[in-house]
Image (spheres, rainbow, N blue to C red):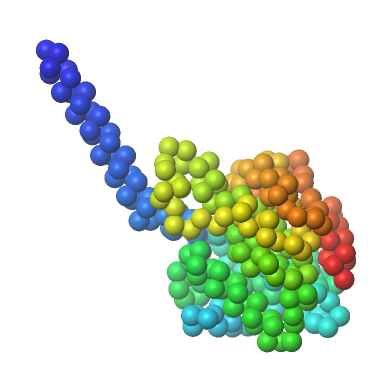
Length: 272
């Protein structure tokens, strides 16, 4: 009787292990489908109120990226390069971009490979190529690094910190940044060996120490996607000069209200 019970328990344990291993295999294979959501659409019909030119930016590996370019005065004003998050199209950022109309900036926002109708599939390496190709596109217009402000939103902070390392850009804006994709993923999959399985790690916290330009970190305390403590940690690690805009009630998609816009304007003005 004891032997049968022991065999039964052994079979149960083996069954659970097989299920767990199967889950790990599925997560490993489809992890980028879980990380990148190009078809997610929270676009509610906002109309673009700032003049833009739709441009094509060829990457170093020959993928054409859609970009929206707003040019006020390239010589007089800094140019923001905007790296968006892991979901949606360029249209999903219209409610933010419209506010740049009232700021003394030019801007370029690009859609990642696999997003907004672009060819290719997103990956950490691929998005680094996309970001650097967009920087090169701006330089071909006659801009240098001191003319460019890098703006990263959520996942885009991973590309922003990568590019900002050891370079002399005008400034860096990080909206709802994570410390690393490994730590962020552990919040959703606490019983999964994320460090071992994850392909795209976006290690922001270890890159911040290499960034020696002015930094603005923005984050809301009730962020349900990227914990607020991660934004605090990124700010803590950042070298001076650094600034923060932390709020008590903002979720992951921060409210572009007067206070946030004032923080952005002050930061941009300090770079001129």
